[in-house]
Length: 149
Figure 1 (spheres, rainbow, N blue to C red):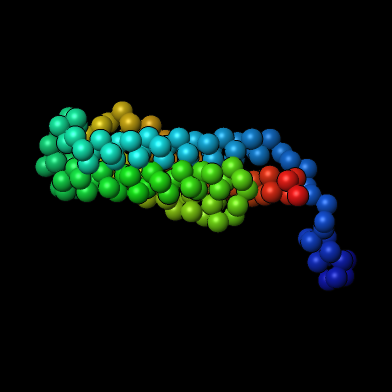
Figure 2 (tube, rainbow, N blue to C red):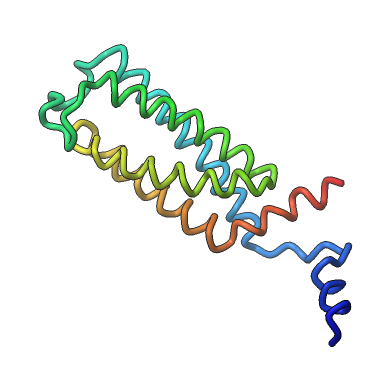
């Protein structure tokens, strides 16, 4: 195969057939949105009602006040919602942002584990699932953009 034939094969105008992983990637995009909304609510609670959580701030993995954790969770929540929406719409930037923010979110939630252990376990599981799906199969979401043209 000549070089020009190889280039033509990679730049084919015909879209590839969608696989079952496309549904998984869309699910992960929706999951990122849901996790972002929960993070945002959790962040707002931490900012406005510090007495809601089980432990004092000295019991957290990182000794900071709940307002700091709240703002961090709120910001991460908003970015997770944006990345999740972008993944569902098939944008490549959203895939990259989703992996980065899900990684940061897992670390932030691990620091918050003594305050709210049940959500921390769920959030870290969501984040690890999202990271895996976006890295390994995130390219499938490109099909969503190709089919809308």
